[in-house]
Length: 84
Image 1: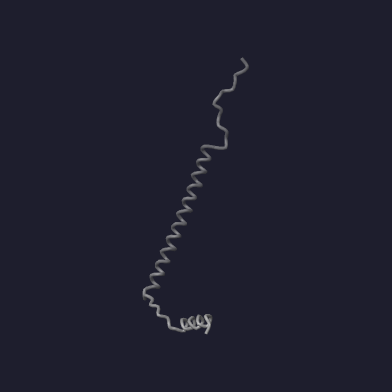
Image 2: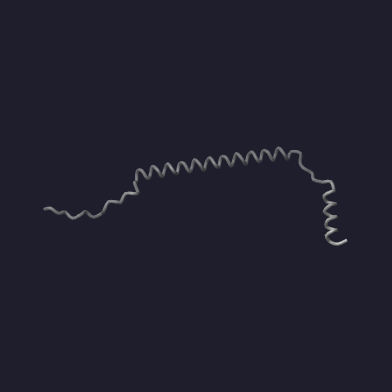
């Protein structure tokens, strides 16, 4: 028997053997509650980020309308007076 046949026989024995996995009886309710909490937490975080983004957009719009940063600042030097 070569190495490949030996490995194949071992895999077949493992697959044919009954599973000895002990699952806690309350696993499903715990998993559902954890998943529900994770979904609620993600939804709350998403809402908070949207509110923060909206508040930042409103604050920027108000600042831009008051400060008018696109206008050139007034010159600090007065132009020469001619005509006297």
